Image 1 (cartoon, rainbow, N blue to C red):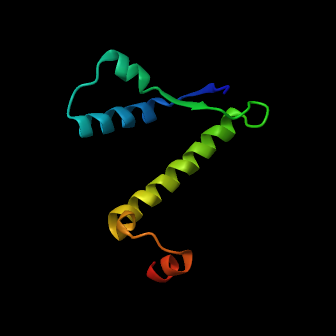
Image 2 (image 1 turned 30 degrees about the horizontal axis):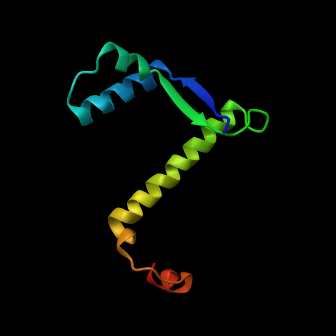
Image 3 (image 1 turned 180 degrees about the horizontal axis):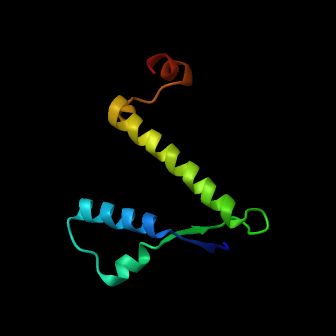
Length: 95
C-alpha cells in the first residue's frame, strides 16, 4: 500500500498553545526535539495526491477529529460503549 506524509507547519501561537497544553497534561518540561516537533502537524495517509491536495487532507483530519470528540462524549456521558448489541430501531428509541 502506498502512503504519503503530509506536513503542515504551525504558526508560532499554535506552537506555544500546543507546548503549554503538553506541559499542563504531562507536568514535565519538553526537550528541544519535542519543542521542534510541536511546530508541525503530520499525517500519514494512503489517499492519492492526484485526488486530494494537502489542504483537503488537513480539513478531512480536522473533521475526523471533531467526530472522534463527539463519540468520546457519547461514551463518557451516555455510556454508549456499555449498551448490549441491538437493532437500529431499538438504539434510536434509547437515544
